[in-house]
Length: 224
Ligand code: MD3
Ligand code: FE
Image (cartoon, rainbow, N blue to C red; front, side):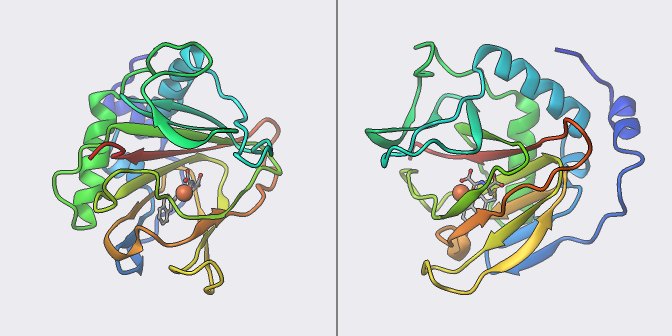
């Protein structure tokens, strides 16, 4: 993997859009525009890391328990990875394609997750799973709750890269009204406390420049 200095990171993000201030979308839900660079290694480093992970654990379109193929392609890093197939949703220590452990979570990402969670009031967050979603134009994620983790008191730290996407944040009931906001590349979103079980989703990705995609990393604590 390419090693990048702090100067390289700053240059890589130098010409990014002007950043909005951190904002609470709801109690327990903090949006940190540009948080990947302010609190972590920046998007150049993160893109290079995703390339290295996906060389060992390729992106794949998982099956839902109902037999649909997901439009988002996924892989994982860390001691546990989120998987879905006809048997259901669960966390697994092994990649079902290769039967070997997922690539490790580097200290840079653990530190970014810890800092993001701390900014939202969740001190001492230590993730053990990182789900990496890849959206190509048209890919979407329908409204759902994340409840496959053993202890829902732990927050989730989400990091977006590449194309912006329309994110939908609903309430605790599936039919509750949704707030919409654009998650840009480099943004962090922290979800914990009373926001942890809110329904949420992503509208179909609109095409950007040729070949552009969106990645979303969610840092989670899956084991208690
Ligand atoms: C709100 N991913 O992987 S990240 C997912 O952009 C997922 O790929 C979306 O939903 C994406 O499960 C959204 C932001 C996010 C993550 C977890 C949440 C929002 C959340 C948990 C509770 C409430
Ligand atoms: Fe989710």
